[in-house]
Image 1 (cartoon, rainbow, N blue to C red):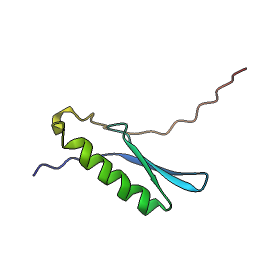
Image 2: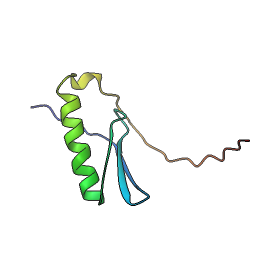
Image 3: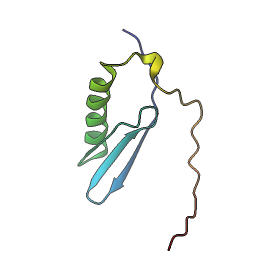
Image 4: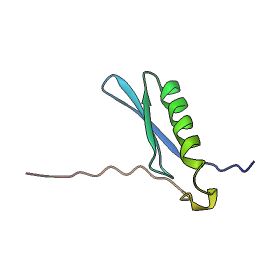
Length: 72
């Protein structure tokens, strides 16, 4: 069984926690951070059944950069 390190983000949005995998763009949610990450793990497992790990984007270094955006 192969292993790969994946980068994930979790944040609160309304009454739910959202979990997002940065390598694949897969996301999920739950009532708690733990539930959100468990749901994400399940979704990633299903997604990765169909593609080789070599096709997953490698994220070397992740920086969260604030961006001010103005719109009409």
